[in-house]
Image 1: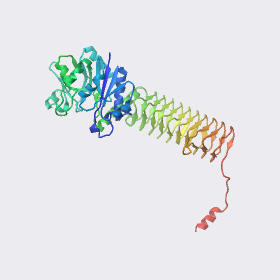
Image 2: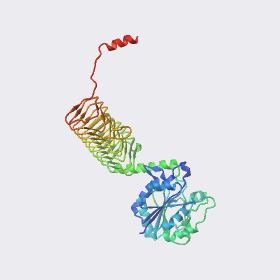
Image 3: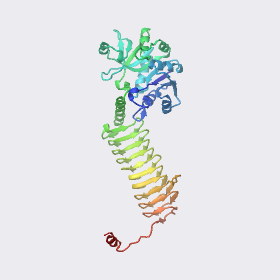
Image 4: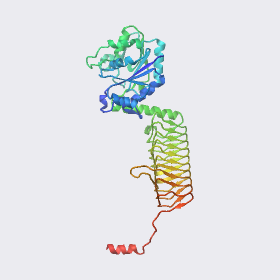
Length: 456
């Protein structure tokens, strides 16, 4: 099947009240348009054409991919005109047409539509649904024999038509390329000044050629025209994703207060507490525990990892059996080894932390390479920035760093060395050495008594 796909993404989206093109508003971490592209890509179309208009350059930049062809609808004259603009880019064969603001459509439903279209030998097929709670969708008119004869836009349907015809147009079509000539026969609507793609149904039906509408789940057809629609669609998508992982053996303590993006993967017997956000391409291993208030973005967690309360993890990797948090921050390009402990109020930035290493509290490690079984005391800082350049700190395996130490990069603390508490280290520390950097302590007798007398 030499399939072409046309995604209509040119609309203004005035009701969104936004300076962002409507199709770029995000649902569960991705633009609506990207969800539609992701749904059609597994169909392996020969061509995928995206019709853009409002914010065309921004849309092209955001969803750019080598398999996409963009065409511009210079004047926003409706869906019929948008398909006509795309027609010159299409191959012979079936053309799947769908909307860029309908992110809930699934690959499975599209496959069924294409299969039914081919088996029935239709010139035109489209999706329909029935849901009294959803307004604004065109009414499908069938003759007494049940054959589709027309679609009447909701705003032009009479009260009688709305009562009699409850089957609604889903706005997803398969049209044989030979029928695209019918687009020239669509008349401009007097009220809106637009060319409605729905009118092609009337034209094909009138020519006596085969066509039909096929029912699909109503939720897959939901489009987005307002911020309320955006919330409702995102909520459906969120519930869909979480339900999938619960069926695969993941425990959610409060599914209604958890967000998981579609590309995320989660291992069996992992437990996820409420108020957590797991985003992007994150992969979580088996038997992990994610406590409340955690946000994980584009990161990888090995088996048995524990992420404690109110922790932020960005573009990082955490090895098997490690614990991070509470109140920790792993910034991008941080790598935590196996069985490591990153504790409360610890910030890691672009650093590698070895197996079994502990930084339990109040520590900043930036641009550092830390070996295995290192103990880093509270209040330790790698001073990696001189105001112009970033420098690296190396802490080799078996090192003990005392509390309140400052390591002035570039510097290396060699294997099994000790750094005394309160030290400021500016030079490399040899293996097995103790580095001390303190002023000599003095105790001034009777100082406090003399001060009180002076203050009177």
